[in-house]
Length: 86
Image (tube, rainbow, N blue to C red; front, side, top):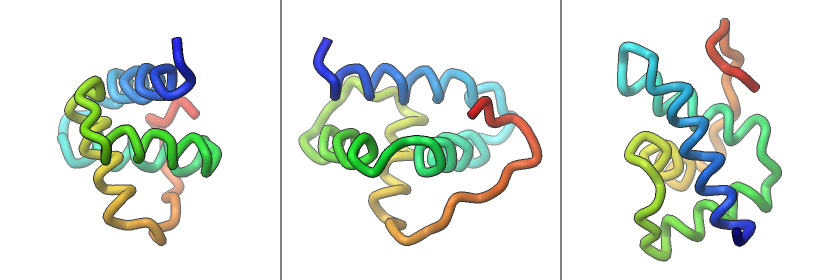
């Protein structure tokens, strides 16, 4: 499995964890926060590049989280009160 394919799988796994949140917006924010907080800049950039290149292997929630990261590159990670397996 290529390293970027592995990143997609990891993002989808994170998405599956946050899918349990009742609000879609909270799930997307949780995924984005986890990726921003715990992934290296190179990992994030590789995943963002896959999305920019039209990768359709990302599930809906992680795809929206990566789009958020692309649109808000300067946003800082938020401390969560729970629910983040990180």
